Length: 249
Ligand code: ZN
Image (cartoon, rainbow, N blue to C red; front, side, top):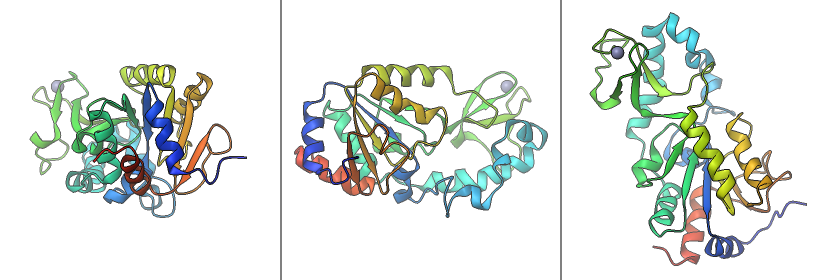
């Protein structure tokens, strides 16, 4: 049986005793910041065709696709602010108690909260990359009134996040495997584990002997399979309680 009624206190003790704590975050960490999830009833894929993230479609319809991507992502994300869960993770890192965050989110909120060692498994929305020459441009420098945005070389700029049909950036993949290898405690926050290959990282951590703590509002793919301690709560409230118990303010 999964540990449905894990006390937050127990989790705080385990974090306190950990040598290498890694956090793994997903959409559930950012919904409280107003970022809509991709899946589920209010998810983006209920409103928009996932082909907006398909590389072939993007190359064939860059102006149209950029307009949609800009509407759906950049406008929301630009104004979104971190919530208590993001800040709690940043404080844990600053206190030397958290070694890394692997995030599936592309919303930049861990960075905004002050986290430094963030592995962005699916890329981010801070940068764009030229598909011809590879030059990177910060999103802040881009004129979105002229779609699609282009590089000085004339090449098409693409958001620096992973589209369908694209591989996971090798650096992020390797860094995530390293974390799954090195973590003695692995903290899953706000993610259900259904996205491949990202969802496999906690499974690898478990296979390598890590204690798996899961914070989710409902049981997930992980709960019965790999989770050792399950906190059935929102990310912000669970993380705030954990920090209080660790006397980190
Ligand atoms: Zn270029």
